[in-house]
Image 1 (spheres, one colour):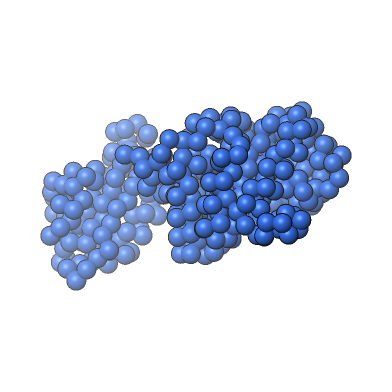
Image 2 (cartoon, one colour; image 1 turned 135 degrees about the horizontal axis):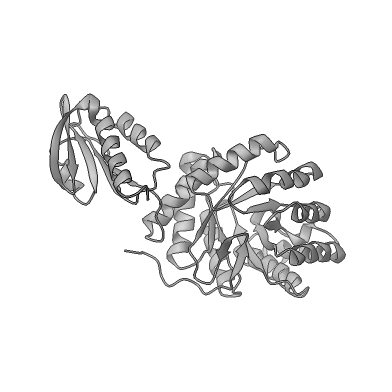
Amino acid sequence: MSLVQERRNTRRLSVGKVVVGDGQPVAVQSMTNTQTGDVTATLAQIHRLEAAGCEIVRVAVPDMEAALSLAQICPKINIPVIADIHFDYRLAVASVESGADGLRINPGNIGEPWKIREVVNSAAQRGVSIRIGVNAGSLDREIVKRLGPTPAAMVESAVENIRMLEDLGFNDIKVSLKASDVARTVAAYRLIGQRTDVPLHVGVTEAGGLFAGITKSAIGIGMLLSEGIGDTIRVSLTRDPVEEVRTAWEILRALGLRSRGPEIISCPTCGRCRIDLFTVAEQVEAELINCPLDIKVAIMGCVVNGPGEAKEADIGIAGGDGFGILFKKGKVVRKIDQHDLVRVLLGEIENLKINSGGK
């Protein structure tokens, strides 16, 4: 069951082979944290992101070496690349010529109108989309002077930049309006949704480390998606970007929008638990991270409540004192030595995978 209101109606555009907007599935994005000029390291990280379910990847392009490196990176990956550009229009043009599928720019810091026109012409000629990135911390000073560092100021900046590109005949535009706090971010996206039909890339920027970042992102992104706002998302964490992708998918799953791989449910443990459930859960989670099966897997601490509380799970285990049980759809299948719980569970899931043809 979905918790989401009717999706906001947005125009359609393509980021490489990924179609965005116009009711298409919300796409999961992340960003590399390697030096883009280090082709080997960047490729390795993108391949890990692909395996985790990343559908669009953004890379930093701070210099010409990074821009030219895209010519070696783009042909060797399976997801579209967005080049993140600041200040220098030549980096945007070079990135497009090197094979980037999208650009992320702030037109306001590119400079004179002719430079923006060069970027737009280059993108248009190669079918490259542009994301206008508005951040609360880098708004135009005149706008801030009039409106303060507010959601209204963020929206005003976005609308001005949209108009700038559309006046040049360019319409393949996405927009993001990010702040480091949830309240301003949510308010800005709600306002922009009333002003334009451009697709929106949603996220809370500089959200923090694992716990703060996941919390802010789940609340901010989750609130917006539940209101039908958002066409692509990125969870920003001061962590391995693979964690961003995993979190994004869990947000989408929790809202009933999309799912990818097994859903793992587990109990918080209590005094009845006689096994190291934390370790068991981590082992199972790590082994199933790239499993393609759309199933629900339960990892429960005791046999008293395990099968009953997790009766909707397709398969699960519950610990005991020196032993545990394997259960399916709430029915106990067999008793297992506690040291074999993980091995047996993973073996059963592998059998399900084989029987399903690996899908």
